[in-house]
Image (cartoon, rainbow, N blue to C red; front, top):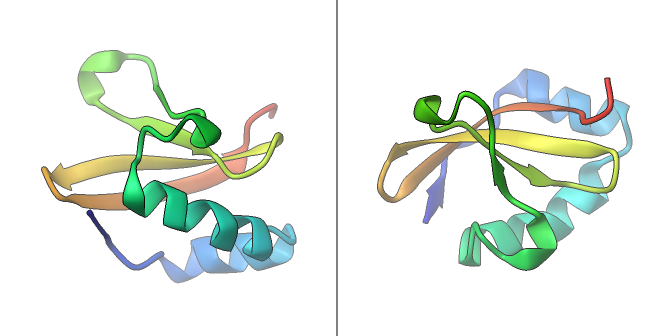
Length: 82
């Protein structure tokens, strides 16, 4: 699977919230198997939009979409509880 480069705003968000190490730990799991149990991947509502999220840590999640069958774009990283 190919992951498109992160938007600079998302890279700054990772740095600002001290998530870079956690991101670097989760990214290989995501690249190998986006449904890996350690990622806690879920489809978001409404399901017909096909927007998914996976866990960076207990508090933060990455939101992503498939641009085609083999390419993913991370569209947001956010606090899961806000």
